[in-house]
Length: 291
Ligand code: CAA
Image 1: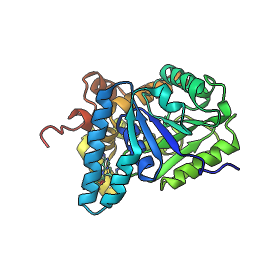
Image 2: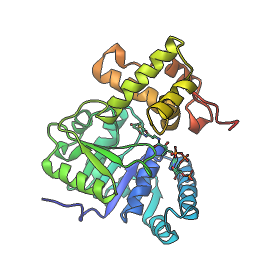
Image 3: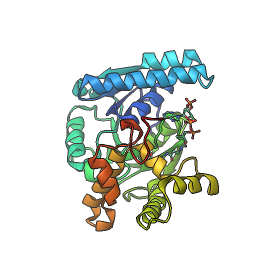
Image 4: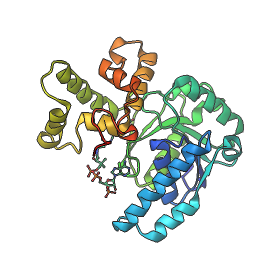
């Protein structure tokens, strides 16, 4: 059985909130890592945010300066995806939640990645069978799903599709554990996996409560925190994850299920259309500009 030991170089695609923190976790765990995006601007922004975050961790005594300096040396930023992927052992794709784009990306990855390289997607809603068929190596494709903020959240869900090999699952599990994560392994794929399905049930009821004008988002969040002990309420969490991500996840689910219940809630659609994406844009359910 293959182990994670042969993994020397990890490529993370997409310098958004998830991709950048996943890349940082890989580098902090000692892997040579390249974070790839299509332009320099998101890479520069990701680098600034990551270095600030890691320096803050050092200031607060959560990490030592040596560990952070080692991670900074291991983490590269690049736009020439094909050249990077040609020498990679493991790809974690964290690009936009759009099936057509992901299929295009995976077809290109398949053309240039070494034969042994595993191609994983961080998607929580687009199951890997839908992407694997764009490659000539479906046995080496799976979902490897991190949670936001990836630097902090302990869980990774690993999800096979029908053709994912046991070797790919084992290698992905060993990698996740070597990143310090707790693995939740699904037996078979289902959009949303386990954690987001649980979360969606809570979110659906929270939206139902505001539809009926039973309580405000702030009071519903307070109930989740102070009555149920959740670290944050469902509206605060949508603002953290990003309303754009929440919206696109619903659409991706709808594309797979064609069930109208999967469509984004009208209020989420409205916030998305107004560009109120949550913390990242300064406004979502809550206003952060004045905070
Ligand atoms: N990135 C990295 N680290 C962060 C962070 C971020 N965005 N936000 C907080 N942290 C870390 C920092 O170390 C922070 O300390 P400093 O502010 O001193 O640097 C520390 O966490 C504590 O943060 P806060 O004091 O702001 O607040 P907190 O104690 O409530 O912790 C939290 C923040 C870890 C995000 C916590 O509220 C939490 O666990 N929330 C729930 C998150 C969650 O449910 N995530 C899953 C989302 S679903 C998903 O991701 C799936 C998907 O497919 C979209």
